[in-house]
Image (cartoon, rainbow, N blue to C red; front, side, top):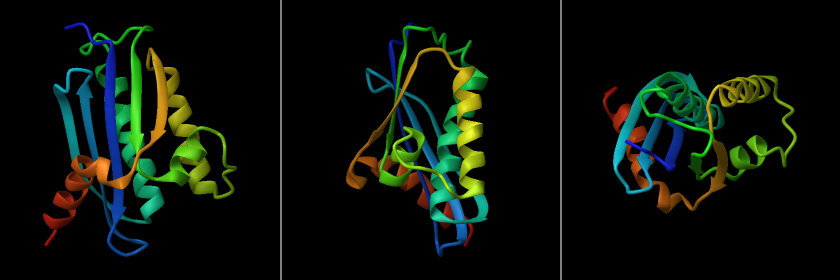
Amino acid sequence: MMINRLMINIDGGSRGNPGPAAVGVVIKTENNQLIESISKFIGITTNNEAEYQALIAALEYLSQYKEKLNLTENILIDFYIDSKLIVNQVNGFFKVKNSRIRNFIYKIRELEIGIPGKIVYQLIPREKNSQADLLVNQALDNLS
């Protein structure tokens, strides 16, 4: 299967800030074919940290399955994120002062190096991120 483009929606959320948190990731091809969805509880953390952990979970998946997915230097990997803060921080527009968040950024940069292709982080409205959001809520609902 030759993939030219991946479209990845990510979301993280916590109930309480900090509180029980989860990540949701939806990975699709340019033809809207679902490759993977990830929905998992990540413990007690803040909303922002959950968003970062969702991005890291997606990058780890790509890193782990790059051969199976046949990723090449020509692939475009679009990340769709509904957090303006996260998009601006990973794109380098906002300074990162918090050391925990800085460690997430280091981890992201480390993972990016091992993934072929061009990675783009884009801001989308929350209502365009409903699938990833649903996965976050499913993971949190399964706790009760």
